[in-house]
Length: 298
Ligand SMILES: [Zn+2]
Image 1: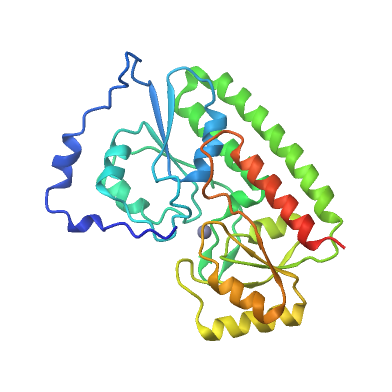
Image 2 (image 1 turned 180 degrees about the vertical axis):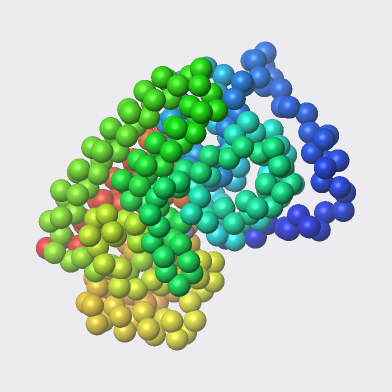
């Protein structure tokens, strides 16, 4: 999850020489090279883009970070990333500050064209600044899909109607998902939840949950003893029934807190890793819906 990449600054050879040495990658196996090479920053942006660019001839979607990387809070670019970006016709980001490495990327590759999927989205601010986990609101995920579509149409107007068709199709699937989630989650009496990292405020806002505590406040660092005690007190005070952990993070502290409070531990997936397939986001959200209903019903 929090894989610290070795900082590029340590590399001795000149970066511009490295980039000049990068040949456009041949497609191999007799396939023509793609006409539009789209690179996405990380998993949720990749899945959204896969849907928008589906079945469009000559368009290739590549994800920059490894599928198991997860959120990019502490991510640092490695030389291979710069090669991938140097070969990109367009780079699609989540925005909202998730890609903290972006300034460096733009500095190294000034010709890099970027589409910000988070454009014109109202952000929730907390003590760490704007919260970047917008895709966990299904409504905002739709907005991201629309932003990606607008950006791709601008870059590749020849395929405008295909992008738009794919966008409408996927947004419709997201609308169906959102209606079902709203209908089922509305029934739940218990609306106070404890989550693992600060990934769920947009989800909570959309589906009317209250996050009473977050186990790991600083992604990638274990909570301090004092933070653990505070979390236990908050769970007891609000009679929260479950701690929702994330498959991408170690869950030792969550289990310790559960043991103290009698709360159960369940999975809530922030959709930052998973299968690299079109329907992955829909499937992950379906699982989240089922987990919430199972844990918080009656
Ligand atoms: Zn995160």
